[in-house]
Image (cartoon, rainbow, N blue to C red; front, side):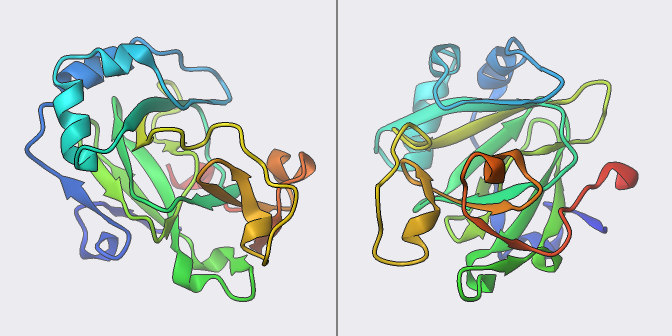
Length: 210
């Protein structure tokens, strides 16, 4: 699988590099968060909110709306799922990391073929916006010995507990948490937990490409 850079033209439909913000304080706080052998996600981490310049960065990214700074850390090389929100997500890593991405417009009849997925490498310390129309999930590591520590910045309350009992359509059936629509591959742990199986094709693994 080809791995593009977020600086490549190919990234433009999926997101953008965000410049001009002071992110060193956030990076310093992020470096103190745990890096397990699997993947962990915390929607909100107070230490990230208290980091130098964190409030002005959050206000700038979300235009004054309430926001949450959390993290997704660990080791991973597989796709497993894709998710989307009704808004952009912002990511920033202490090390290089890889995002596996597709576009919401590539969903057909509630399913997405994983052949649509592209891989993008994000350099350490580079802040990126992943657009609301971009399907994404847990990052993949570049360095197996280091793993990844990635800021996940979203509107406040996103990815917290919420599960409707029913829905009006197939997209509603993908709602897995607050502001989190999840499409699982049949081989994923999330599918075993009841997530909507909506990814067809190979469960991508980039272990041989890194």
